[in-house]
Each structure stands twice: as structure tokens, then as C-alpha cells.
Amino acid sequence: MKAQEVFLAILTDLIRSVQAAALYPETHHRVQEPLASLLRRVRNEAKRLGGSLTVGFFGDRIVVDQFPFHESTPGIGRLAGRMASRGIEKVAIGEAVTLPEMKRFVYFVAGVGETDGARQWKEISFGRIRGDEPAEFPASAAGVALPAPQVLAGATDVLKDVLRSIAVKGPLGNVEEGRDIVAAVMKGLREEEFLIDRMVRLQARDDYTVAHSLNVCVMVVAQAAGLDLPEAVVRDIGLAALLHDIGKELVPAEILNKPGKLDSGEFAKISLHPVLGATHLRKISLGSDLPVIVCYEHHIRHDRSGYPTPRFPDVPHPASLMTQIADVYDALRTYRPYRTSLDRETAVGILRKGRGTEFEPVFLDRFLRMIS
Image (cartoon, rainbow, N blue to C red; front, side, top):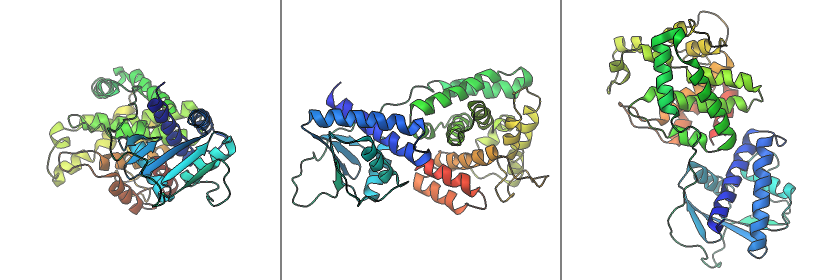
């Protein structure tokens, strides 16, 4: 493998390790596996390079031993941002680095667990680049993109058929293909740590509901997987998230795709989609009540405002609360005919303002850590 490919793999392992450290307990396999891979690759490359591997962080670039990697993916951008927040412009890792020290560094970067960077380090040194150091990193070079996930290739086309089939055929609709998509999402999240970033950028302008439903499914499955629930429960939650907007298939297309602001009559019609969808799904054997519940509740806010007006005092189902957060975030981040997409920081700011009123605080905090 070429050096540049190895360095890319090291960056990928580091990003995955930091992301996992922020979401899972340290004994979880999603923390241990990328961390073990990171340790192995770093040791090998440090030995090959004479005893130490150096990584520099310069604005929108990460440079590994002279090879630059531009902010071509959100993963690289967020890693650079995390390093900047820790005051890290340069990291040198020795070939004798141990697993405990590597894990300590990952958790320091992630900002969880033990975050005291001042305690003595043996094989890892980091900090800002001093003015008297030579400019050893190239000023510019072609960026190298992280590999794009392939596990969901064609999923939007399949989902389009699934949603239309269920909406038109009801009990005869092809629910099994929907379950297959959820299984692919679960597989993708296990294998590709950048899946959420990729899916949110589908930006499908021709069929918003399809891309949006897939995006929400990915984010909700990721949230549910972090709760250590049985896989069967995560699959049910994923199917519910995938079908949460099925009621929009029963709303006139000219209302859904209207480029301007909806009038009161049009808004009243589109506000019926949770009830329409839930009523429709009740006729279908889905193996779980969750799709009906989430479809009905995903616009009911944590403070019980929103729509439809709750008829019972019970709080929304946890799956509905997770879906609602992902639903709003993706809607803010995605292009619509009546407005452009919002940048990540603006969207996150809107979510934070709704903490405790529109959004359940614990689930919102977990979601924000997941996408940070």
C-alpha cells in the first residue's frame, strides 16, 4: 500500500476512534476496533519513518508526513476543528506508543473521560507550532477525498418504490424491501463512520421525501444503536423512521413542492400527513406498532405542542422523540424550493434553542454529540 493510502487509513481510524469515544463506553467494540487499528498503523508507520509519525493541522488541511489532506469531508473538517479547540497544531507519535496512551490521547481529543492533556506523555507530544520551526509542510496540494460509502448505493431508488408501493397498494405494498434498507443502514453504520455525513448531503431536489426519509433513518438508527438496544428493536425503530413521512405520499404533490410559502389551507392539508400516514400504516402488517406510533407522533414536540394535538397525557415514544430531532435537523440542512439549505452551525444553533421545549434534552444532547 502506498504511503499516502496508509496515512489516509490512519486519519480514518483516528476520526472513527474519536467519534466512537464520544458516543460509546470504552469497552464497546466500536471504540476498541478502530483504536486497535489506529495503534497498529501508527506503530508501523512511525517505525518505517525512523521512530516517529508527525501530523500537522493547518486550517482546512491535515498534513501527515508531508502529505496534505484537505477538508474534503466533514470527518476531516471536524477532526481539524477538534484539534484546533484543543490548541493542537502538530502531533508526533513514537513507534513505542502503547494502547493506554493512544486511548488517552483519543479521549482527550474527543473531550470525554480523562481530558487532562497536561499530565505527562511518553510517546505522544503535541501542541502549537513555534515560530522558529521550519515550514516543513507544503503550502498547497491537491486534496485527497476519503472513500465514499457504497453500502447504500441505489437505496434512494428502492425506497422511492417502497414508499409509493405502500401508499398505493397498502397491505400489498413491499414492506420487506424497506426492512432490507434498514438492514443496509445498520450494516453501513457499523462499517462506515462517515455515513451520516454522506447521507445528509444527498440534497435530492427531485424527490425530497425519499432522500429525507433515508437520511432520518440513518440518523435514528445511529442514535438507537448507541443505546445498546437489541438489534431487533433497532431494526423496528429504523423501519419506523424510514416510514415516518409516508403520509406525505397521500398529500398533493403541488403542495409538497410549492416554491413559496404555504397558505393556511395548504398548511392544514400538509399538517394532516401524520394522521393520514398512521391511519394507512395501521392497515399493514409491519411486525411492530412502532411505525404507526412514530408516523403519528413525529411532529409532536417534547412540550406537547406541534401537531396533531395529543389526545392522551402520555409523552411521545422515545423512537418518536429521536425521529423528531433527526427530522428537523435534516430538514434544516437540506435544500428546499422555498429556501436554501442551512449550514451545520446554524442548524445546530436552532436545535439548541429548542432544547427542553421542542426537543427532549437527553436525546438532543446525544444527537448533538453524535454529529459533532
